[in-house]
Image 1 (tube, rainbow, N blue to C red):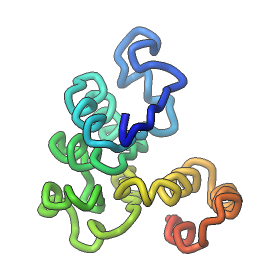
Image 2 (image 1 turned 180 degrees about the vertical axis):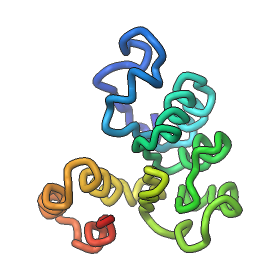
Image 3 (image 1 turned 120 degrees about the vertical axis):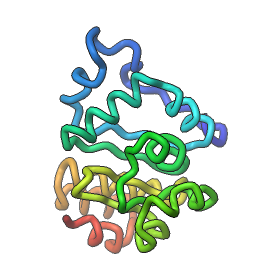
Image 4 (image 1 turned 45 degrees about the vertical axis):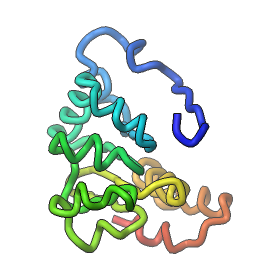
Length: 160
């Protein structure tokens, strides 16, 4: 829970089919870590989740994180790509690991690393549209952005 909001997953992590979670989750289009300091700390303590993320990185499968998760989950576990960002109050944690140009960006797509990161609450819609562009294509992302009344600036940057 972050800022009083509760999110409920379609399927609990522990309720996934038996077997190594990293293999089971290979069929997912993307694994996305939400933000929030408390949630990120919890994710960072989950050896199963970290295994899934490391497997995805090794296999070149997409994963994403927003807000505190890039700094508190990805960075300490060698999962943060060279082009990344996080919640601005946590920039000092990742400054030496990422390029200077990307850290101040609202949403960063590192196509080579297959990782998307974003700064936080005010960037969630741009982050979501960027994920739609990657998973479903720019035309669908454009339609979603228009319906959300987003400017085309975030979508233009989503092109790979």
